Image (tube, rainbow, N blue to C red):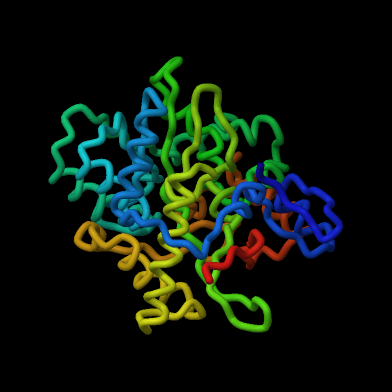
Length: 347
């Protein structure tokens, strides 16, 4: 169960509805399950063992397992977990506007993490039975009606896309269409973008470590919808026991690290995130040698830069900019709005 709600228990189906309601809203992410857990108790398993259990759980559930591999820490850790535990991945998909790059060393369209991290890592791995797929969404934008959000809603696509409202995310809404060769197989595509939202908040008059679920992650990448036989799977944050144990374990590890002075939850994301990743993904430091700059705005991704080199009279440029104009009626474009779940305290 995923939705938004206010203090009067009014329900909002989308973030945009919640943001424009005029109410202080929270993100409901399976609260009925999460609030039953004693988050103060740390699981006895190691984090590596919990990662292995999660990977095996996914493998046992689906006929065809796809890993969406971006070259960042989150998805690199997922790949490492499957590979070192000899758990088969059927397909690895790398997504980008590759045809709009001048060469395969550039980061002009935010693809360098794939060129400089993914390619070298995959060359070192023995994956003879895993299909490697490069999906170039820039080519699809030549005919915008290739995308269901545009064919169904036209310039109002931006109201239906989820929390990340950039052109890049239009592709993810139709992920199955662009990679499908599985017919009726029960298929999952794994996203590894869902890090724990560790922080500290007031509880009984004291600042207490906790975490909150970030809606921009869970509802990003085209939202959470199922596509026929395709199921989106978030590796780290999901409403099943193994993922909940991962969340609990990560929270306690981060809490100890903060107490040891390794990082502070109040640091800016550019400072704390690299430290954070070393703590919870301690086996992959050599796999991520390049970091693309972070996207600043939810409606303008660095991965959409190819659009600025598109003719202003092209269909996609018109539809994208009209969508932004529509959005600007409701929220400032130079913002990245986030709505959090209720806090779950680790102490």
